[in-house]
Image (cartoon, rainbow, N blue to C red; front, side):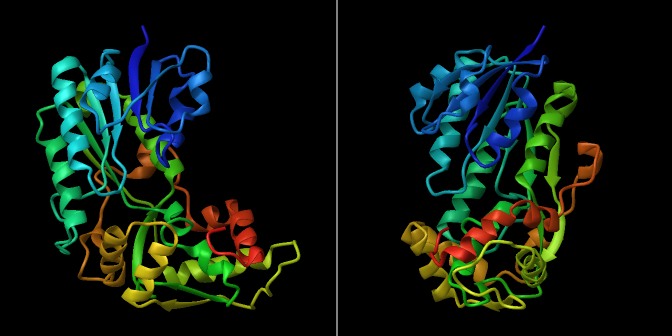
Length: 323
C-alpha cells in the first residue's frame, strides 16, 4: 500500500526538484501543500493539493488533517520563520501525532553556526532548534550553498548585465564554498524518503557538493560565455574579472533586487565577511557521502554553469539588471 506523503513548499527552489521523484512514484500517494504558487503537478492524476499558509495555524492543521505517513517540511531563508515552525509543530502534535517521519530541509547549523549575531540568523537558528527539539520524528537534511544562488540573491546575472566584464560580490576572491545544485538536494530527499522511516529518524545529513571559490566560478563562466552564439548588445570581454564589493555596495545591490532593507543589511554583513575562520560552513563535511546517497556523482559547478548558458548569455546581452 502506498504511503501518504505531504510536501510543504512544493513550488520552491528545492520543492520543485523533489516532485519529479515522488509524483507518479508508486511508493507514495502525494498531497502538495502550496502557499501562493500552485505547481502544475497538482493537476496530475492521483495528486491531491491544499493551499496553506504556515503563518496560520488553522491552515496548517487543515493540511495535516490529510493524515500523512511522511512529511517534507521546508522554511524559506527569510525573516519571521520561527512562528511558522511553531505552528507546524503544534499542528503536527494536535492533528497528525502518528506521522512516521518528517524530512526537514533546514537552513541553519544549530551546532556550529555563523557567529554574526544578526537578528535574522539568530531567528534561523531558533527556527531549526524548535523543530529539532519538538520530539517529532525528524530526519534533518542541511544543504550547503545553492548553486542557484549565483543567479538569484548573489546577483551574478545582474552583474553580467552591466556589461563591464567585472563580477562584483562581497565574498573574498579565494574563499571556497561548498556549492550544491538544488537538483541534487531534491533527489537526495527522495532517496531518504525511499528508506525505512524508523531507521532514518534522528539522522542528520549535511549535503555538500563542489568546493569552489567565486574567482574560480568567474573563470569557469568566462569559458561558458565564449561559447555563446547570439550577437550581444554589450561586448564579451576576453575574460571576466572578479572584484570584492564593499559591504555598502553589496547592501545596495541586494535592496536593488527587491530584498528588504533589514534583511539586505544582515546578508551584506554575512557575505562581506565570508572568509576562512569566520564561518563553520567552510569546514562542512557530509554525514553520509552524497554520492553514496544519490548513487552517482554530484552535479559540478561547471555543469551547472553550462546547463544554464542561456541564462548567463541573456543577462549579458540584455544590458539590464535582474535578467
